[in-house]
Image 1 (cartoon, rainbow, N blue to C red):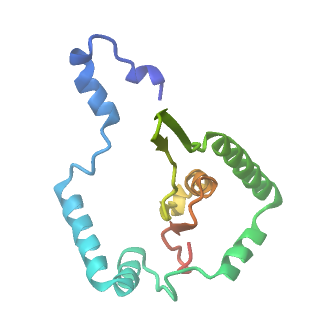
Image 2: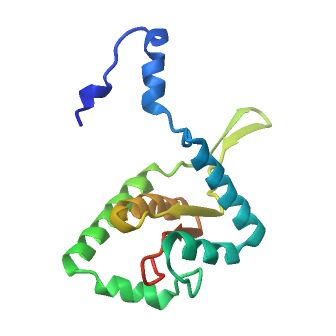
Length: 170
């Protein structure tokens, strides 16, 4: 797809409809999809982990032994990566961390007049949730670009959600 397909020129009032189509990040316009999504969210709020297990069976055809993947399973998966792929992912991690470390906002205070101090302080959020697609859309970049900047910013709890494979694991 060529970038020129999205090129628009003209006065803002004239091009606003084209821009809104390009930048529309609204949820699905399909009422059935919105309704089903709302049902799933309500069920998970109501039933918690039991709903997650039932939905994994219903939607993914798998039985989950646990909601959280244990650390040993994660370590084993990392150890099974092809060395070249692991090196590439580690390189990407370093580059993303280096770039985001340069962008971390600095706290600043200034005394605008005697006794009046104005400041800006950047405090990281407590937790970040990241969805990492699975199946044919398993993009490690989704995880790297969510988790690495969060860690660099000082977020302590990074939670990753990914759909289960046939074995019940992401």
